[in-house]
Length: 365
Ligand SMILES: NC(=O)c1ccc[n+]([C@@H]2O[C@H](COP(=O)([O-])OP(=O)(O)OC[C@H]3O[C@@H](n4cnc5c(N)ncnc54)[C@H](O)[C@@H]3O)[C@@H](O)[C@H]2O)c1
Ligand SMILES: O=C(O)C(=O)C[C@@H](O)[C@H](O)[C@H](O)COP(=O)(O)O
Ligand SMILES: [Zn+2]
Image (tube, rainbow, N blue to C red):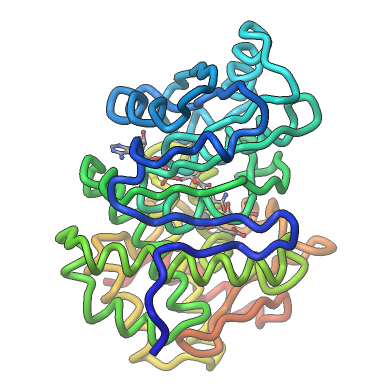
C-alpha cells in the first residue's frame, strides 16, 4: 500500500503546483517564497476576515500586505465586486509584481482568481480555502470567474494558482449547512470516478458529519487527488474535466433561478446529482438500488434531493440552454453509466429527460 501523502501536486508541467492539506498550516506556514515581487493583496470577506485575516497576514513575512474585504455571498460574485478589488489594486499602487491571495470559500477563490487573471493582463495568486467546498474543489484547477444574472460562471478565465494551502482546522468555524454543501462535491468524486471512495463515504458519512478530524482530512485528500488528476489530464475541459460537472447543469439552473441566494452551490449540485441519477436510471444505466444509494448518501449528508418548490420543467429547460457545455444549442449532460463511472452526452432520449423533469418538479414522495 502507498504511504498517504498530505502534499499533492497538480501536474501541469512548468505550472505544476502543490496542494498542502495540513492542520495549523494557516499562519504557521511561510508563504513568502510563493510570492512574486514584494506586494501582496489578500482578498477576503466580512465573515472570514475577522476569523482568519491576521493568521493569513502572518504567512507573508517581509512582504507589503494589503487587504480588501468584500461583502459575503454568492450574489456578490459580480462585476461590481470584482471592481472593488481593482480599485484597491490601483489605490495602493500594485503593479505587475503583485500576488493576490484568496482567503475564503469558493466565491472569494473564483473572484480573486479572475482578478489575478486580468489585473495588468495576469499576475500570480495563492489559494487559502476556508470552506470544505473550496478545500475539496474550488481552490484546485484554475477555473475562475463571476456570475451573470442569466447564467452561472458565465464570465471567467482559466488561471492556475501558485499553491493551494488548505488548513482543515478552519472548518471548525464553518456552519453545518456549509459543511453539507461541501460534502456534495465530495460525493461527486465518488460518483464520477471512484466507486471505492463512494463506499468509503457510505461507511464514514456519520464520522464526517460529526467533523472527526482523520476521516475529514482523508476525504479532503482523496477529493483533491481526484480533482488534481482530472485537471492534469484536461486543464481546459476539452474532455474528461466535464465529468466534474455532474449535477451542475441542473444545479446551475437552480442557482440562477433562485437569484444566487437561498440555495447554496453545493445544495443545488446535490439536487442536480439526484436528477442526473434519476435520468441515468430511466435510460437503463443504473438500477433502482443505485438510485437509492445515492439518495440515502445525500440525505445522510443533510443535502436536498429535490429542486426548490415552484421550479417547473419550463424553467429547467430554459435555464439549461445557458450552459457552457452545450454545443449547437443541444444540452449536454453528465450521466452515470454506473456508480463511479460518469460520461458526458448530448445524445439522450428526450422523453426520459422530460420524465425526470416532471418527476422532480412534482415529487411523488
Ligand atoms: N472554481 C471551481 O472549480 C469551483 C468549484 C466548485 C465551486 N465553485 C464556486 O464556489 C462557490 C461556492 O463556494 P463555497 O461553498 O465555499 O461558498 P462561499 O464562498 O460563499 O462560502 C460559504 C460561506 O462560508 C463562509 N465561510 C468561509 N469560510 C469560513 C470559515 N472557515 N468559517 C466560517 N465561515 C466561513 C463564507 O463567508 C460564506 O458565507 C460557488 O460560487 C461555486 O460556483 C468553484
Ligand atoms: O473544476 C471544474 O471543472 C468543475 O466543474 C468543478 C465544479 O464543481 C465547479 O462548480 C465549477 O465552477 C463549474 O464549472 P462551470 O464551467 O460549469 O461553470
Ligand atoms: Zn461545483
